Every structure is written in structure tokens, then in C-alpha cells.
Image (tube, rainbow, N blue to C red; front, side, top):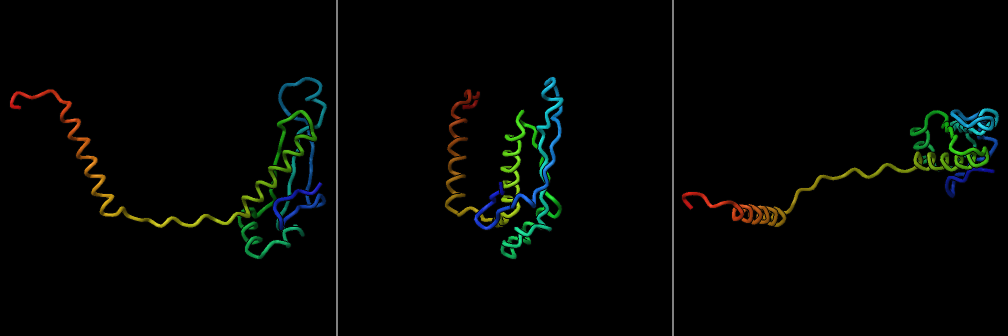
Length: 139
């Protein structure tokens, strides 16, 4: 089943390389014999599907994922469920690599009114705390 990343990119099955192996850890005979761990890899540089992207998207994908994207999933006891999770994670990883970088934050400074309000609030707080103190000898 092909992995749908977005409306422009669908990774066909023949571009995905699957490997299956036994999951580690305890579990007795099922865990020792069943090949439920799933490893999937996809090379965007060699992909024919990646050629359907715009030039900027392709460049972004290749700069964010220059080598093959590899994922390993052994979350479930079922190979089928692990394979489904691997496909979802691969699509998420490719979407993240295709996402444009966020805009740079421009530094701003507070307005004069905001500074004045902040200082007045600080003065009021200080005055309130001063009134809470124990009166001194000279007061």
C-alpha cells in the first residue's frame, strides 16, 4: 500500500525497503520466533516520486533528509500493526522535512505607554508590600 504524504507526494511500495526481525526483550516463544519488528527505509534522492514535488520542496526535502530515512518500530506484537505505524511515522517525518522553515522573529521594543504602566504597577506593588511591614521606631 503506498504511503500518502500529502497531495503532491505519494511514495509507492516499490521505493520502500522493508526488513523484518524478531523483537527483543521478554515474551517467550512468540517474541523469540515471530518477526514482528519492522524496519523501513526510503531514499528521497533516488525516488521517482520526489520528482513530482516543486523544485523548492525537493531541495528542502534533500537538505533536511540528505540520506535515506530509516525507521524501526517494534511497539506491537503484530507485524501488521508495526508496519502501519512505520508507514505513518515515515509520512510524518517526510512532512516535517518538507515543511518550510518558520519566519524569523523580529525583535520589537515595548511602547512608552507599556513601560509606564509596568513601572506604575511595580510602584503599586512596592507600596502594598511597604504597608505590610512592621512599623519602625521612627515611623
